[in-house]
Length: 368
Ligand code: NAP
Ligand code: G4F
Image (cartoon, rainbow, N blue to C red; front, top):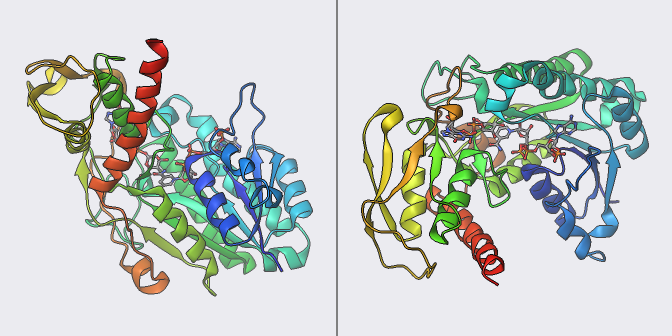
């Protein structure tokens, strides 16, 4: 018999990859989407195009993590074997501007769905396996390097605090009600589907648009922040593996490498044939074209040595910052047999190539 999964946040980066993975494994997939005045299903629309293979097993329902009644209703109606709670206000900088909303959705939202599972029929709370999208942001001002499942948390943002709440509620429901509830403590993971205001995608979008003369400059905040960046598709495989374990548990999912924002910028531009040199300090720092290299890309740029293409903008700094993250995925390797497949170089290449095509199309339309 087909297994059934319910995904909150199915329209997001991870939700879309996870839906594809589960459909490939022959699951029936139910996804919760928010009502929106404009389309918000762009990341999953392609699944419907392949209607015979996949579309018949994918069902979308309106609901919201702020609305207990919709969550309870959907748990009762879909009776899933697995619930993946990926829905969140997931942007750290935005969480400083909307702390209460972030706590409500990313923190209390986790409690609402856990309680909807507990409060359903007895057999459902025993049957359902629950995955919580916990985050390396919980380590914040890191208390040890690298971070493991045992590293104490020290969140540095309303988002980080909300995720700590969700993490502990997940453990509490596991212990109090003997439910199969697990946390994946995922370090940053990116892809060509990453939201365009997260730093990696902001960089690949801007760099490729600069190459086509569609944008002059890339404005960034803290170039020295370091992250343990992996590829989203590798990470949703870990989510699934976590729920296939007989015993619920918590796992760090990471690459065990850390890189600065500055080095990611350099990697992306190098792939586009531009070598960057950094000049100045603090708010006056700039990224200039050092040299133009030969590549197989033929964007019609008019860049020359010495052009300033990266500047600092104070709007992108956070009131408190997470300076460095580095995860140790040893437990996941040993117990789940999971390891990341995509290196940082390959990740930058995948994202840049994808956005190069978008910029090329935009350029073509503009010059028609
Ligand atoms: P994302 O692209 O921002 O997707 C977030 C999803 O949550 C979207 O589908 C969004 O719907 C939905 N959502 C937002 N508010 C909601 C609400 N009130 N009710 C129901 N759904 C709501 O995030 P992601 O990168 O895929 O991350 C997935 C999860 O993993 C999130 O919980 C995130 O906090 C966590 N996480 C991410 C990373 C990472 O590096 N990507 C690392 C650790 C943990 P709309 O499409 O309508 O906005
Ligand atoms: O890409 P970011 O916005 O991701 P951040 O804050 O690390 O959060 C992401 O990863 C978490 C896992 O650790 C997830 F839980 C969370 O949901 C989200 O997916 O920023 C990365 C770094 C930060 O240090 C930020 O200050 O890049 C720095 N940065 C520098 N300039 C910038 C910018 N970040 C953004 N978004 N935009 C900039 O212009």
